[in-house]
Length: 618
Image (cartoon, rainbow, N blue to C red; front, side):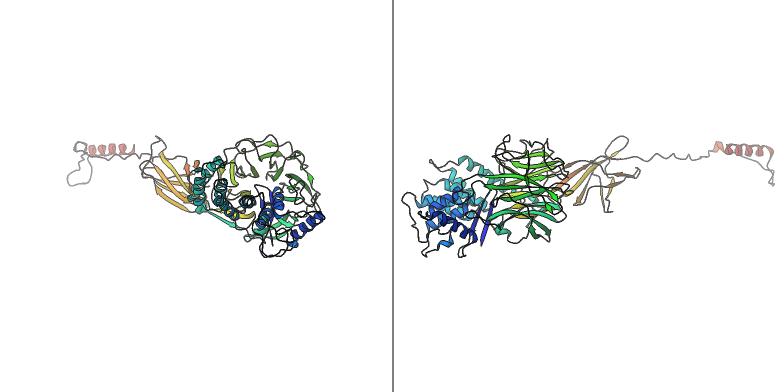
């Protein structure tokens, strides 16, 4: 069975033949082409072929041929089983002008460039052991491979060994110092407390570990466009028949299912298509199309050129794709387009002139006919002198997510996010572990109207397979802590021992009391902090209600967001007037007289009582 590897760093494809398998279609095709061209000529040795395949960017094939040269099989291998043995007889395991260690180093380089880290580490280690003075650089590359395998302690020791080495063969000292910084960053990331909030899971898909499944592009509902490497229906002699194609897929139950080809025309049989996006109105499809110039094997040494094509929606599917004007420049690559969901911009990666170096992120305004205005570089807040690729803009949070190998990260390509718009960006931040790994992490997608990492999709080669595969990431929300102060509305003094009751829209309540500083704190857990209502009670004060008003949010803590509410105030009760008590003194006593043994008042007594009555009436 052939396994296909898509390498982001080198943008190459290689095939892998497992030991003991029969000849593949690819092997037969290459064999036929090679024999046809070689009639009447001397057949090349595995070493010569390995060098040519290496130059062509077919690194895993080159590694297999180097292996055959180093360890020729005792059993004669038929020519049909090329590339393991192009000749119909055993080849010598030695060569007059090439040492075994030199070939072993070439094999290690082939494995590394094909991202087969375990095999590369083993070959580099043998080189360093065989000739430590001549192959000191093998120690550095072995450390890089060990880091990619997540053997961080071993990688650290080997980098230290390399940096302490003397001699002329230590050209990667600066790179080794950066590798130490990478390993320190990895240690920091692995101890992040918020990693407990994150769950990553590979999306199940048929043969994704063998053929790759990456660059998921949302087209609506649970439907996606996905890129995968499959054999071509039209076979061309001397050309690797495995190329990337676009497929429709349904995201369901933790997997990408019901895959079927997108049926988009290719300009030539040796063209790859992938990394697609659809305009916000659904009328235009944009995708990358790439090929290696002069791509026939085994003598290809051309440059891989990527271009962005677009097609319009028709009643029966998509129109024939056309090269997108403005974004493509002859001799340079433009790739990985992304249409913003507001329909305004097309973001893409390109090594066109005017950038910071390598591949940069660019954007261009979209027109109604599907074309764009002239592209604009997003600037140095995003781009570095290395490579930035695969842009994704999350309109809901105003965050640009991209992949970079030019910033401090965990190794390979890491995912970064920067908040802003097309003209102004805050400094980009690494999305951290476990979103990122020591391998390549790229092609991010998150649905709108959600937080960035609550239910996202991205591609990574962190798995055991050969290729980029698609992963789902779900990050639980951080806990929220709401704090504020209660004051007297009149003199603004703080109020201690005030009872504060908080209620959310769902009816859940929290209760606490202010401390001596008038401060209250509520731990809200993962609850939404919108539409919160306060009730305040305190002796000698009126009962008060108020709505929450969040003044600021401190997100620096990795597990808890700290929300600061505007000050609350309550008023004192009005003072009640006290009724005057009537005190009857002796001198105020009114004496009235009656006739002896009779109830009839005397005239002067009647006058006194009448005066008292009049006073009471008043």
